Length: 493
Image (cartoon, rainbow, N blue to C red):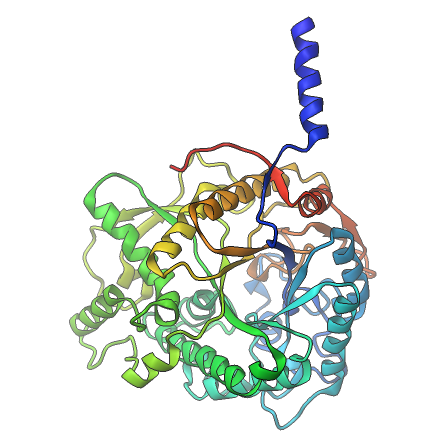
């Protein structure tokens, strides 16, 4: 009995003393959202139609519950309430996105919707009044439908129209916004939108559309960076980056084939985007260039399905960053594929690996998103070694569940990942910010409203869309207050 009492007293003492694994003094914490997922007001006050409006209205079965973002969290009307939620958390910054169609209804600069400009001005001003930095994403998957009607991201001219849109945003908001993200998760834009058609705009152009999309997107990002640097940076003093998502990948076995497959997956998923921008030489990863060139020839194409970046374009894209935004949620196992090359082109066929998860890993509400905290540390160290340790902002990290206010699993997830992030920083990784996805439950794309990531519960059955803090909201508030998390000692695998 005496020993049990002592154990209880020790546990209580540890809780009271707040023994924490600490972050560096200047490290910043925030939360994230995106326009289509929370705003609603899909056609309010002059906003134009975007590809997700069009996709979900015309193909309602594209989402798991046949829902859409027409109302979502109704943040178009409840934005001031949302900033109060941010104030409670005491975050340093809020990452949100601008809806291109809300400020440029046609997608082009011939028509500027001043109501949309006013909406974002109100949010930015209210954030600053509450001492919260606005971190703005220019493109979070919601291309204006008129831009899609002329080919979308497979049309190289769209790079110029994106620069026009970005310049408009810099002009109206750049005096107060100091951190800009051009694109969110480019691989999902190109693969889900133009390869397999699972996401808007729903184009199925396997092995071709995704590569056309990628060149347009990389040039749009790069030219936007150069415009900001040439015309705005000296006055507005901001930073421009891009948010690239990646899992970590482990070989399923110790075979050389599986180990080679891991490096190929990293290069052809993550390197596809990070290499042209962050490497010393620029361009697509060599293994990607050589494989797709070779496979295209085998499949009787007259030219490679991966468009060539000219030497001028390589120079234009290379070095166009002030930081790397990293979205990371989970890890995967990789096994070499032994089947013959298909005559039908596809990105999957170009990479040629089998990807799965370890059944022993802790599960979440999404089958392909298990809890693998040490994967974050490994990925950050891979970036550090491969790309000369750039400044990294974790721009998304979050846990999917089916709902509920008592979200202990979410708290456990973030505790573990934050500990591994601290370990990565101690390894020498230059990580300066951490962002939880997401502020509140929202429209999770093809999952509709079935999957929840929020620190705040939103009652979508109530037309007033009330927000209620989950247990994880108090947890994150305490993380920010203590500038650290309870220490979990784990060895890197």
